[in-house]
Length: 146
Image (cartoon, rainbow, N blue to C red):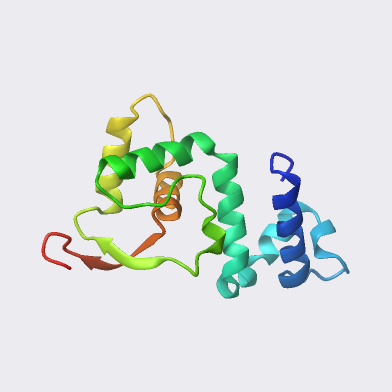
């Protein structure tokens, strides 16, 4: 949180206050971080605005990875919003995902494109999901689909 702009911190703290209930704290955003994290499960399951703000904050804290994921997806022919677009305003994620672009294939290609970067696979996957605005739910053959 300290590395975020004050406007993003305020939004996240307000959402924590609204959605995360921690016994012993009238104001949940004043609880210690580990407790807030543990108690945020229900908010992640139920509130898309909470998820969007947390992912947006994470993306802001990782600008190099955000830009790399954007450049990587553009080079692979994906249509994505600019890296600085406010994705928190979107209604959710698209569920159509190119079937030839599995996480393993994307991870390998990402590491080939950026061999000097040491990035966790899950971070690459999450950033690809966030930047693309897509979840790998409905796998489609892009060569035969509309």
